[in-house]
Each structure stands twice: as C-alpha cells, then as structure tokens.
Amino acid sequence: MTNEKARRFRALHTTPALRLPNCWDAASAAVIEAAGARAVATTSAGVAWSLGFPDGDALDRRTAVDAIARVARAVDVPVTADIESGYGETPSEVAATAAAVVEAGAVGVNIEDSAPTDAGLLRGIADQAERIAAVREGAGADLYINARIDVYLRGFGEDVALLEVTAARAARYLEAGADGIFVPGVADAETIAELAKAVDAPLNVLAGPGAPSPSELDHLGVARISLGESIASAAYGLARRAAIGLLEEDSYDEVAGGIDYGTMNGMLRS
Image (cartoon, rainbow, N blue to C red):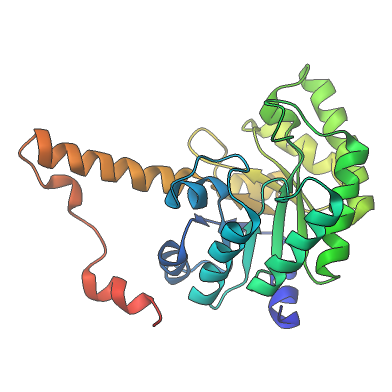
C-alpha cells in the first residue's frame, strides 16, 4: 500500500460526502475513474456475479483478492474493497485476508457483521469486534476499515431499538480498530440524520432511487455515499433488454448510447 494513497483516501471522508460508484471488474473501475470518481469501491455482489457466483461469501479468498488486484491495477485513484465477512472463519484467517487485500493494492475495506452461515442473523458484537481487530492487525495502521452494520438491513426490532443497537455496535467496532461505519438499509432522512449524530465516526450509507439526494445526504452529516451493486445490476439489466430486443423485438435500440470502442479500449492498460 502506498501511504500517500491511503492518506488521500482517508481525507476524502468529510463534507461534501465521498461519492463512491461501485465497480465489479477492472473495466468498470476504469470507466468510473474516467467519469471523475476520486476513489473506487468494489461491490462484492457485482464481483461475484461477474465471476459466475452468487453473492454472499461464495468466493474463496484467492479469487476475491485476485479480482481486487485487477481493479487496483486498472486505476490510479484509491481503491476500497468489499471483503464481505472476511473470507475466513477465524480472526486469524480474516487477518490473512486483510494482509492479502493490502498486498493487492487496496487502501480500504468494508467488512460486514452478517453471519454467512446463518441467513438473516448477525454475529455477536464481541465476535465481530474481534474480527475487526484482526483486520487491523493483519493490514496495519494505514488501511481504512469501514465496519458495516446490518441491523437496519436485516430489520431487527423497532426504529428506536435499531438506532440504539446500531450505535452500540458502532462504538464497539470503532474501539476494535474501525475507522468508519457503514449502515445499509436506511433511506429516510430523519433516521440518517440521527445515525450521523449517534455514530462517532464518518458515516457511510447505501443510496439509490428513493433515498435523499447526494447533496441532501451532505446536509444530513453523511461522509460517504455508496451505490452498492446497483450499477452492476443496471448493466446486467441492459444486457437482458438488449438480448430481448435482438431475440424477440426485432430491435437494436438498447445498445445505443454505449461507450464507443476506441474510448473504451483506451481506458484499459495492457
């Protein structure tokens, strides 16, 4: 990891919020960088889909890290990687993942507290804190650790309880070595503002249609805005519509407006 790139990425978590359009391979990373992104984030769902796997810790560590390395080589801006729950059962295995991700060229990671073997359940707070501490130990001080809390995403309890549980988990994860907190599953402005006040660290939210606009999120105190798998989903949606146009509708309309061959080819490195 280059310290300069890591410092630059860390400094982006301020106001206005860091906008992170998520990529899923080297080409999408290059397109996002060319569009003006100051950093690039991977989406575990998009990466898994592009490799023929479902999302949800289906990748092994080597496959996931190889994908991160291809993204990091394709761009000059800082890269942060979605490592799901860490690609390891034990904290020592998670530490090995973190070290490999840094070696691959990433300067940040997301690590979630959902338990992959128990659908809809979260890891215990002490268990997840230990895994975050292992990421810090394996990666060193420069890596930006974005601790994802899935309390709202999984819908446990009433709104007040969700906020209290999320704030408690955030405090414990920060104590364990996290730098920022990612809370997906929240779209209403009032709750986002309450989270920004309750979390003593840069707050990351997952945005998209129906969520407050990026500028509104700035005013609510959000430090980082992610699109998750939505760009990858939209791209695959286009592929499906274009295929239907050719196969069933006697049309080529859906492939209009793409990036031209020369421009796309010029974004990539040999």
